[in-house]
Length: 468
Image (cartoon, helix red, strand yellow):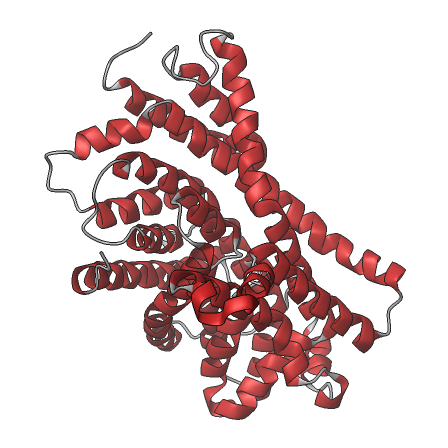
């Protein structure tokens, strides 16, 4: 058994380097890379440190505990991610998302179309994964450029501003969802706090977007998918052919309201305040049930609007569930990797290293998440790995502020440095028609600016409102 206090750091270094090499250099799928590295962490862990030892072989337990950790995370987030993916897919197919954005543009005016994209996109970005969200709204940004003849960079970055932060801070996005589980935080409160904390960085990001638009006003180019002529047809589609605004927004807002209401009542004396109704509120506010109700509303909306049979609906949902399946696999594998780092003693080693040193744990969590995002590209992997490490660091320690601030710091850090090993970087660049250099000059700068703004906000709130 290796008892060196530095051995857990060696395990961490080897695992991180392996992840970087597998994902960025060898282009191994993130699921395979994370599962493989989780097993590697178990194999390198000191003998006797894994559950089930010494009755069973250390090598066998490295594999078995990895699969158990995988199943634990999958059981907690799998249904939620699948239902959120259904809501997103149905909102896209029914025209509901188009309706929401058009209503916001009508409210703000075409001169403030970019601000309308930020505001409407913020609501739509709450339940829809970033890649899907960007694919959904980029045709509207391109159509707005056709209509106004200017500010294409601003319209694209407005979408990124709205969707980037919610992807890192608000469940049911997989990273925040898994972080809430790892950090043992109430999911409903994480949604409320994450959504509210997202607002100042989004506002700051909007100002940065306007500055970048003045410095880098990029042209509208032909891209794969819809041609500019087809986009013109979309922008001219009569609004009477779209669902109503209330029906369009309800599948998005209902799950958020139900989950938040149940958490709020539980925190402030639930049963005593609402009596016999509390069990019902608690039930429908369960994240699985709330998202199921939202998914049923979204499915009924697309069935009515497009006059689909149940068989056709099943076919339509196929791509959304396939996307969800991949995300569930990656998220669960990331959770398994984080769990195996914990068994290997990495978190405990970092905690001992931090003891006696004047280290700000909020800044440490943010910095680790930024480095992990820069190293391997995935915000979700960055959040999962950093959260697992911080659990080990803070285990048994009395924080001077609520652990929710670590949640915020990690989420903002995972937004951090997006470059060419990030799938979101390529989605933004390819679908908008930006070159790699243009994407680095716009999206990468914007993401890091919002990340730093989020860190400063978190440090300030933890100092002024520690909630301890």
